[in-house]
Image 1 (tube, rainbow, N blue to C red):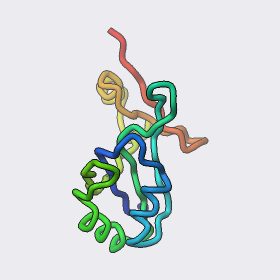
Image 2 (cartoon, rainbow, N blue to C red; image 1 turned 60 degrees about the vertical axis):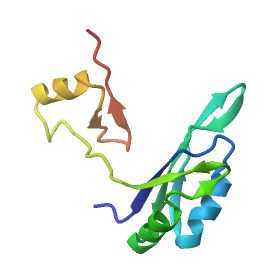
Image 3 (cartoon, one colour; image 1 turned 30 degrees about the vertical axis):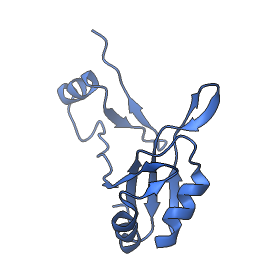
Image 4 (cartoon, rainbow, N blue to C red; image 1 turned 180 degrees about the vertical axis):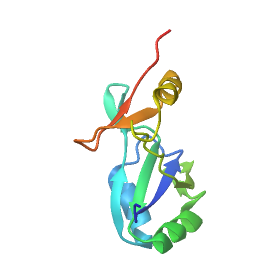
Length: 125
């Protein structure tokens, strides 16, 4: 079981950087990791309007959740929610019929036994 505690932050302004997020959320405790997906927007790199912050302690995560949900950062009121990890399906945990059903909806279906990579399968009709 993972001993890290994660938040998902939505409605982030496109000009907000990882450093700004780290400064705001770091006030509440030690951050283990920030996942800040990027995209190209109008010819330049920008965030995707969301981020995941992983804390080492539950208390830190809860403080950040209660203090930052609805806060205005760069003109937008961010929405902060607790993030739950998806279960990883492996070939040992499901049978082939279940794998086909999951694959049809394009969800993670298998974790490689040799790496930490999760595979996503698209089902073409």
